[in-house]
Image (tube, helix red, strand yellow):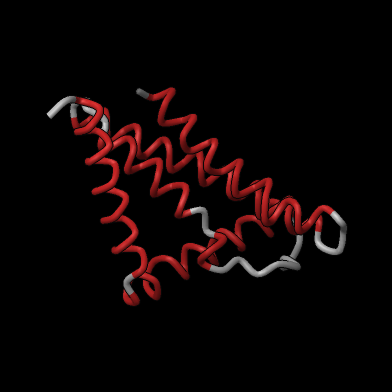
Length: 138
C-alpha cells in the first residue's frame, strides 16, 4: 500500500475512533459537557464578566476540529513521540482559538455579526486552523 493511501486510511480510522469515543454517552457526560462548561468559565474570566450571554454546549467545544487535527497528526508517518507532541500542541492551539471564538460570540450577541460568526466564520476558521497546523507540523 502506498503512503498516501495508508495516511488517508489512518486519518479515517483515527477520526472514526475519536467520533465514536466522543459521542458515547458516558464520555459526553464525564468529559465533553464539563470541558464545554470549563471553556465558558475561562472565556467569561478572560472577558472579565461574571457570566456569558451565550451557552457553551458540547457542539461549541471545538472538539470536532481538535479531533480532526489529532487524527491527522496521529495518522502521519512520524515517530510516535513527534505525533503525540504535535497532537498536544495542536489541541492547545485549537483550544486557544475556540476560547477566542467563544469570546467574540459573547461580544457579538444581539448584533448582525452573531449568526455569521457562529455559523460560518468561526467553524471554518477552526477547521482551517486545525488543517493548517497539521500541515505545518508535518
